[in-house]
Amino acid sequence: MKKVAFYTLGCKLNYSETSTIGRIFQERGFEKVEFTDTPDIYVINTCSVTDNADKKCRKIVKEAQKHSPNAFITIVGCYAQLKPKEISEIPGVDAVLGAAEKFQLVDILETFEKKGKAEVYASPISEANTFHNSYSFGDRTRTFLKVQDGCDYSCSFCTIPLARGSSRSDSIANVVKSANEIAESGVKEIVLTGVNTGDFGLQDGQRVESFYELVQELDKVESIERFRISSIEPNLLKDEIIQFVSQSQRFMPHFHVPLQSGSNKILKLMRRRYQRELYADRVATIKALMPHCCIGVDVIVGFPGETEEDFLETYNFINGLDVSYLHVFPYSERENTLAPDMPGKVSIKDRNRRADMLRILSEKKKRHFYEQNIGCEFTVLFEDDVKDGVMEGWTENYVRVAAKYDPVLVNETKHVRLTGLDANGLMDAEETYQEILKH
Image (cartoon, rainbow, N blue to C red; front, side, top):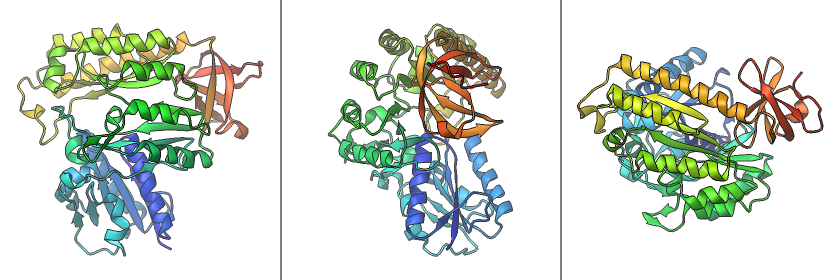
């Protein structure tokens, strides 16, 4: 029995796909092992959102060779689709598979015999037009369930349409079936993932269903306690979705809504499909219906043409929003996108300085959000990650709670009252009948 190990770079969507590919291997008689357990085969699922992700891929290949020098190393994912030839020339790489091929890699590679030269199987992205059901399993308490793939948007900084193809979705019936399968394993929380999740409903280029309809049907899956929406574009986050989540017992009060810039000038250059006024309206609507709702924000700084005044406009706009945390990305040039040829290039130094400023603001926002929840009662789902005798869990509205490790609590929900922040910025809590969770 050959041993296979996996490593995933990038987003929740990649994690769901890696887990699914792993199950394909196991169904074919391979043994899934840890990265350091001298596997016969490595499968590295890559991201290519930033240059840093590309560099990480090269580093993981080197680490794989250290642990198992004779292993067959396969690269899949977005980087593999965008730059298959470049990856094939990395020392140690034996095979590169593109977006249309990655789910067939066991059939394509069969024996996994090293041939001295990397094999490349990467069709044009137009051939990646099939939706492959995927969800993570057995890796953590929460499961990432892919409901949508690809993107029809053409943001001037983004390579995702080139790496994943056009927008396509699973059917509502299949998603509900997957949710029930996941529930049978004992998982209590599902995170819905996709490249452009709110664009759910396209099948064979035709819009046959909607994300709102999906949410309504999943809310009826009684065997799952919690659903989260991983990320949704502000122009696709309709009032009806916000209102439904506010009344749902299963969809958590937590939205992650990409902003990218608080300057309408920069949003236009980015070819985003909204202006900052719409974003502010989405935040206001959420908070009016769910005052304790957690709202995460993606921001890119240092985009070509972004002056210091533009950046400060973004900073002040976010500072005035009732949001909970930020994911901040210094702009990174990507080949075959429009942005690198735009005037007004921002220096790396200024990109990093602006990113640091927003990360500090994020910490302030997060702390303020946590403090607003002190004294409130929530339900915490505890995970199995334990460090220094402390385990962690998440409230419905994504407040991270610390508790003294108790194996009975793993994958269990407990009603608690949040009592205050600890030295690590995590929330202390006590059960509502006064049993102290953390000592």
